[in-house]
Amino acid sequence: METTVSSPTDIVVEEFNKTKKDWDEAYVQTLAHIQAIQNHGKLRSTGDNNAEKKESLPRLNGLAQDGLATLSAAQFNLDLLIPQLPTDDHIQNAQFTLQSWNKQIQSLRSNLRNANLQAKANLRKAAQEERELLLGGGEESTARRRNLQTKAGMTSAAESITESLRRTRQMMVQEVERSGSTLMAFEESTGVLKKAESEYKGHVSLLTRTRNLLSTMKRQDVLDRIILAVGFLLFSLAVLYVVSKRIGILKLQRKVVGAIKAGMAADPTQKLAQVKEPVPNVDFDFNIEQPMHDEL
Image (tube, rainbow, N blue to C red; front, side, top):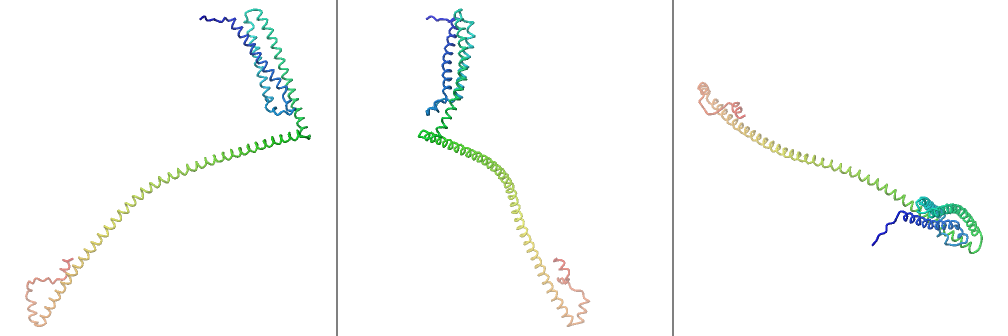
């Protein structure tokens, strides 16, 4: 299978034909947009309800300006291609085409200005007819007023809905702010609770140590009480023992003294002899102070 390689001349010719095709398409579309601008507002004056479905005037102007920009780009591209055409006939035809395109662009711009003026006139005329229909009588005027009232009601309802949505948004913003402040308060409360928890743990350890100390002090108090009771009991027993021993010695001493006094009263000479005679070694201790000293 043979493959054909396009020469630079063929490429230029193909680009020239493509540029002409783009021009023709853009020219037709731009002319249609200008015609639509010129007829804009006429359907309203005839009372056609499909007028609202048509493109708005600013959009039509934007489309027409885009079409003119496309035509200018095609004209510039053709101007660049003319020196590259293979023959003088192609160059001459391209120059005539370029001049024709220049005139058509100027004509389209002039038509666009006239179409905008015509559209404004149509709008003024339609508004005048609208006022006359509203102020006049008849079924058509009544229907038109009802239509306008319906539109006004719809507009009022839309405004009411918009205002309601605005209030709802404001309330949501306030709720979000309130929720934010509540969260901040919760965070602060959480910090306070954590601090209180740490302090409580410290107090718990302190109370535990205090409880242990109190238990130790109670045990020591009981032990001290037991020691005091035992000491008092021993002291009491010692005192009783000393007192009992002292009472026994006193009784014996009284008995001996009484016996001696009784003997001396019966025989005074014997008493004197007994006094002179040495006292026999009797195993009695008559010294009162000595036993008391020994016992103590």
